[in-house]
Image (cartoon, rainbow, N blue to C red):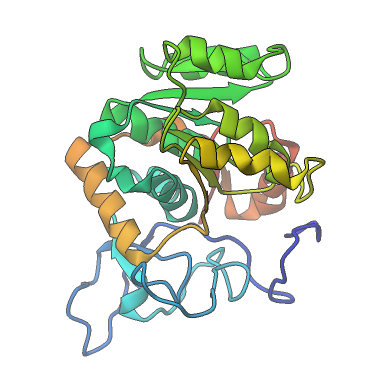
Length: 296
């Protein structure tokens, strides 16, 4: 957004950033669910309280002012309590990346049948999904062009597998090998439409899901419409993910609290508020693994 190449309209001269962990310093006279001193966060889309809401999106840091500021005033319906075991830096990673990852995995509602997932890249959503999978006992397969990154990430859990997409000529065969010929239940696609035909080939034979969460490689593709007919043969689906609702956020927080999931591996680097421009430059460079945090 700050570089002017994000393909959606944003608030002119707005305040950036969508993820935050904050402390309540004052409340209105009618507020019942929050108290001074509570550790809270703001939901990403102010118009998405439940998954059934059908209002236009009002996204922090895009449609409305973001959270890179010392103080802000919000309606209590836009806030959630944060898991108490997390540090400020860890908790600040949940709002966008965490809820997107949770929603991409259908909130683990199919956990009894869920065995493996393919996660594209080592950014915030993929890394958050990886930690969810580890906590839930699901095998995550993560991709990167860096063997060094993959080796570091594999240390997070014995079930973690990695694929270098630059040096692996046939990724579909490698996915099948890593899943004993089955294929994965979910592909979390943050690169964009171009890889969708390949994503479908990674799925299990019946009922898998490609969750489209981003477009790091752009919004185009050189494949023909017939390429997605494989969806029908596999009874699979493509699911568009626009983060998630407050309801999703609460359910994720409950999962993190119950499992006492550490989000420390998500925090790649912490910058001070005065270093914000450097933080954005570092994020744009793509050198990070997980999330970049600005501490105010």
